[in-house]
Image 1 (cartoon, rainbow, N blue to C red):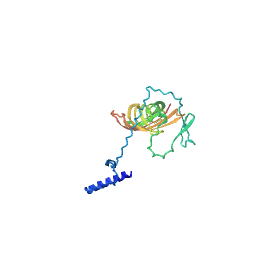
Image 2: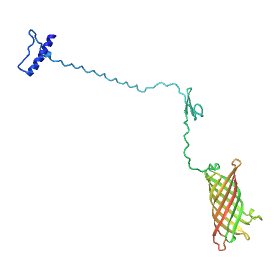
Image 3: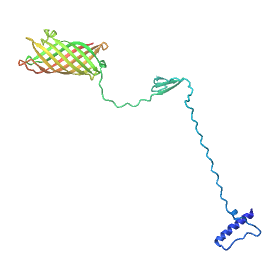
Image 4: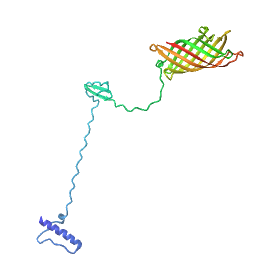
Amino acid sequence: MRITVICCAAFFASAALAKAEPRQSVAPPAGHVCPPASECEPKKPVPKPAAKKKPAKKKTPPPPNCECPPGPPGESVRVEPEPPGKNCEHGGVKLTSKGKTGYVCNGAPGPEGPRGQAGFVIPAENSAPGFRRGVGLLGFAASAGEKNYAWGWGPAFQLQVWRNPATEFTFTVGYAGTMDSLPWSPGKTRAWMFETGMTWWPWERLGLMLGAHAQTIGIKPDWERGTLLGITPGLASQWFMKDRFIRMRFELKGFLGVNSFESADRWVGSLGFSASAVASF
């Protein structure tokens, strides 16, 4: 081993000197034989063989039309309201299934929101479409041209119809003749009175009216007949009695129209008012 090292060292030294001084050489020690030059060359590392990759395992597909066995019978979840208390501070719902109980609780109330716009109070009586029939008294007074005024009052029949919570229609027929012939009555007239109107109820007790009035009337001394026609804007009020079985309706309306009490057979302007009180069932 020492001989091989010495020889190799001599070999590398002679090679280096040969490059510097090509004519000089270094001889090995006497009595020693150097191995071939190929043995003095540095050995190159032998690369290791690459590791073989294992082939990926193929997934076995499930057999077709695989049916699993049925599981145990289940149990429905029973849901019950839970009042405010120790389980839910603000209330919630109680869930029960297979002897186990759980709770879903409401959150704490939030802050109060902004106040909304004022709405209309819908009369409970008119919460659904319907109608009522009523009887009462109807009175009317208006200017009547050359007759100065026309006045009449008497019994009346009224039909009340509504198709939505806040709107009502009325149809009224009255006769002035029997009561108006009493000694203390100032009218002394005989008349048929017809009224129709629509009432809008923005409040439970008070409504706004707009209608029409037509009347044919005979006035003393010789019962001269004339006609009055006009519109009747006004107010209406309602009250209930006997568990809402009886409804009292009161109307007070103005009259703006014309009358035919003139010698020249022409129509002239007329102003007046109309009032009524009706009990309906």
